Image (cartoon, rainbow over all chains, first blue to last red; front, side):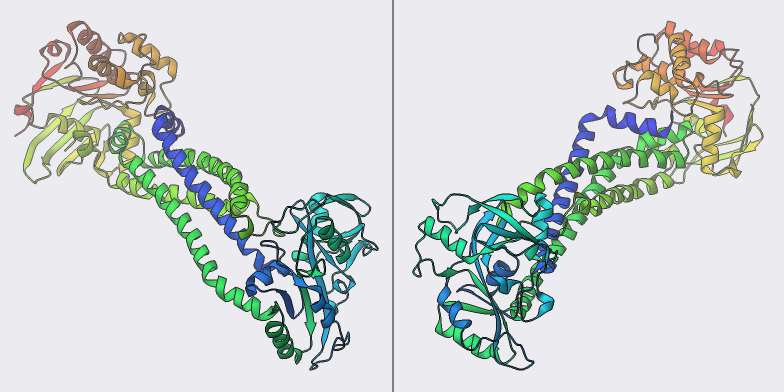
Length: 407
Length: 209
């Protein structure tokens, strides 16, 4: 009888223990895989932050909340800021010409979040979004053109790709004005253009006029202290000497909050750095623990087979054949366990994603495929094979005579 | 295939002498029954002949091969190809059927041969039963079937008839000592029913010093 058949019979004749072992392995593989993928997804926000100039103005909130809300299009619905402030920033000190050390504001881009198309945010803005003080930050229209009226929308490349949309298509946009239930009906928009991929959160956005957003607020009878003269954020490009004035103007004299983009990024990095390291460590620890579980399981199983191994040796099975037998058993358990674990991973990933909802990017630009868990699968198989080393060491040292005599 | 033992000395794990014997030869095709009291080393002597235990002193030759010069795996191959051993504790693999236990060890015998041998040993109908579900007597016959199905040149048997009634003991001994097998047989047993079947009966206490 060949070792592979012996391995198969041993597993199939001990169905309950085999099932428990495979289920335990599968759960370890599945949970490690899903956590690893959630970690990767959460980490992806650091690579997808959009370019939004030097400063961001939002409602009074934390710097990170404003940064991620405006430049990564994530988190809860933002509070409002008065549009009058935006108008005054585009006032006398506003200049479209940037110099190295001036104190002027050069671009102020309005953003009003007002709707959702599936999970994608729809924002009102204007042409300043395309024409910024630093031209390398300018999103470029790939096909079609910038919207011409309130019934048109420009979409990010990721939205177009994921939803198979093209210029001229009509889409329905649902009003989204925070937690307030709005009676405003869904609106139909025509896609006028698609923005070239920026590999940033802009690829996940839909852009129309600020005015259409305000119409939705009026239709929905959303009350704010500034009526419909509201915005969600302004993105500001400014000269180096404007930082101080900008800071004191916004933070000390208005209801809004100014955030300097680079400072906020550094803050985000430093605040979440520990979390990221911790996350990576936890993921590694879970994989390690899963490996240990697998090893412990296999060692216990193989250890209990000491007499059986001695019998087989007495019957003429060589050490190489015994090794093959144990290896086949390990693989026959770990491979289906990995497959089952991958299915658990596949099924639980969207559930965990929806539970975590605002804690992780909803429309990741990076692909978080099931194959990112392959490191866990490899670890499980390696752990199984490593687990063979202990019983194998015993096989190689085993005194068959003593084992068979039970001395 | 002959068995030749020369100046064998075996100690217990605690270092005490278990037995010592001078020269002992079993000619090819002969049948030898070794009898003697328990605990004196009869089973250990069979293990020495099978290459499962290396004696503390002396040489063991199977055919023209000195076991001292064979590696562990080479001794395994020798057992697989030439030696069939029936153990006192039977050593069947619990989760395998009677037929599968007979097929253990090498690619031969195939399933049909295994079933045929089991039938000869009055085990028809038990071929697909798990070893653990068989009676002690049936298990004993499966252990014997496992050996004779492979038609080894040497059969070493340790109390193979201890749990059998007269009829089954007779069937088993007839199969084990079948002239067609032409095997060299060394059997250790207290069973007086066995004496008549052997060419030579040796008192273990007289064999060892």
